[in-house]
Image (cartoon, rainbow, N blue to C red; front, side, top):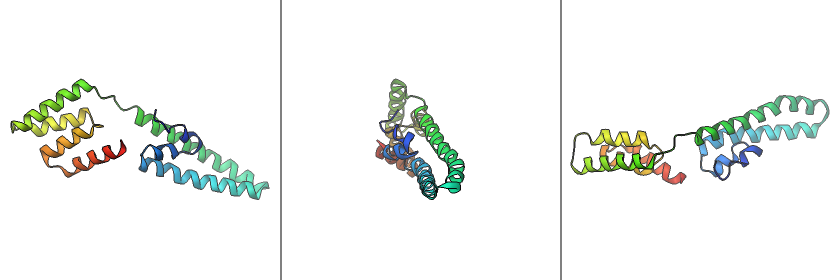
Amino acid sequence: MRRFAPLDLGLPGAGLLLDGRLAWALALLIPAILILAALAGGLLLGGFAAEWVLTRLLPAYLLCAALAALVRLRLAGREAIDPEAAKRLARDAAQAWLRDAPDTAGKAIALTDAAPELAQAWRLRALVSGDARAARRAEAIERRG
């Protein structure tokens, strides 16, 4: 679990935002803030409005919190990278590239399939295949830290 995960309990998406998961964070944070504003407005009006707003928007807010928890589980549930297998695949791909072997691209793709969270794997794939998307993916992983 990441450092800011508990923030997602209070305000869905806040912890994801601080962890650098901007797309997921904004998708959860914006609706959560709007729901909280509507809840506060309904409670300020009081009476029937408070009851109506509370019964309809509180489940929506809880749904946002549940979605934030599911996103956390999805991100945490990714396969752990076997460091030895990743090193072996990286070594094979780098050696194939240095030898100018015809199967270099296949080895680089196998490396990114085995270790999709390693920026170095995507850098090697971009170097071998000239794929600009692989280079952008490596940069995105490095920015996330």
